[in-house]
Image (cartoon, rainbow, N blue to C red):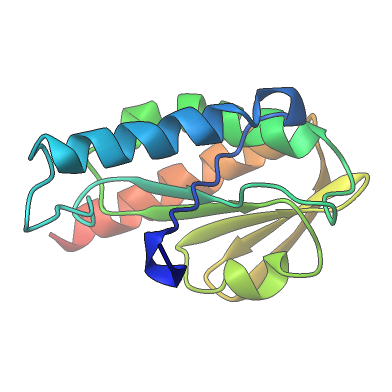
Length: 148
């Protein structure tokens, strides 16, 4: 056994639920062994794509994990749109890692920064960010729908 025998799974879940990463890794391996993995993967790039970091010691507010889940739930109505939303937990990697997303959130200790592509739209309290994100998402959907 060597370097290529390792699998690492990271999930955006509270620390108490991190053992779920082990179960997910084992499920991936079981699916591969059973032949349930397609050779051509559909990455869902023609549908809503939500990316979130797995959280680490740089996360300054544990509300980030709940926010990532709330974003997933709130955006279900946009599932058929080719839009990427990134939800990052820290101000170290978040600003750069959200640049490639259509809409990005990166979290600080007291505020969440909202971006459209690489353009900063401002910072908002945790209890206001979902409303602002929904407004931006609706605007983006409307703009893309009008073009087609």
